[in-house]
Image 1 (cartoon, helix red, strand yellow):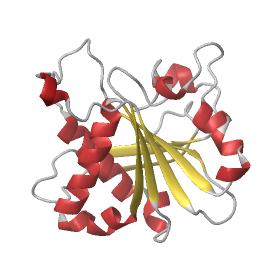
Image 2 (image 1 turned 135 degrees about the horizontal axis):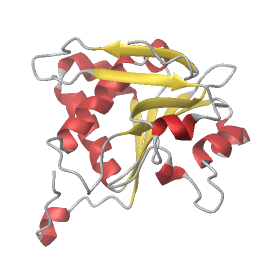
Image 3 (image 1 turned 90 degrees about the horizontal axis):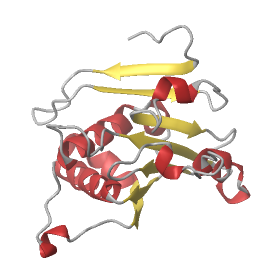
Image 4 (image 1 turned 180 degrees about the vertical axis):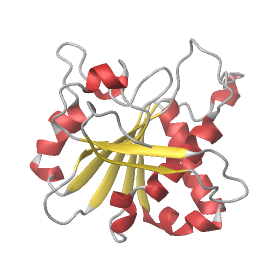
Length: 199
């Protein structure tokens, strides 16, 4: 897979091999330069799909922090301030002294309500799991833990990602690296009220 010449991409990796007989989706992810001014034009209004690395510390990485948006959100729009477009995981968090040694990522998936999709939470979780597993940045630092922040349905995606990592033997080492999951407005018990997600 080649990047268009106008897109400043540090690295694009595509993994299309089946990871197991239960994992069927091809995976792709990109690490984009943090200072890319044309990102909005190339990503769409909500942000890129897949795993995107926002910040890489210069020294030793002590953790990987992954933000996962919710229903009808986006990898960029969910975590941005509407008034001025400040993308706080990249603009603020990466500059905070407490996070100077944390690698920060976002994960985007097609979660819109305005289109039909055959994908569901399980599929999104499988994609997230494969993206993390095939990320050269995350897998190369074997000792750094993985932390998740899941908003709304993103929390369900993260929870399913962890369950799949525990269930599938090829992902057990990755499951051991997951140390914390922060749920923000995640509807854990929709079924109690008779609600069903449309996917």
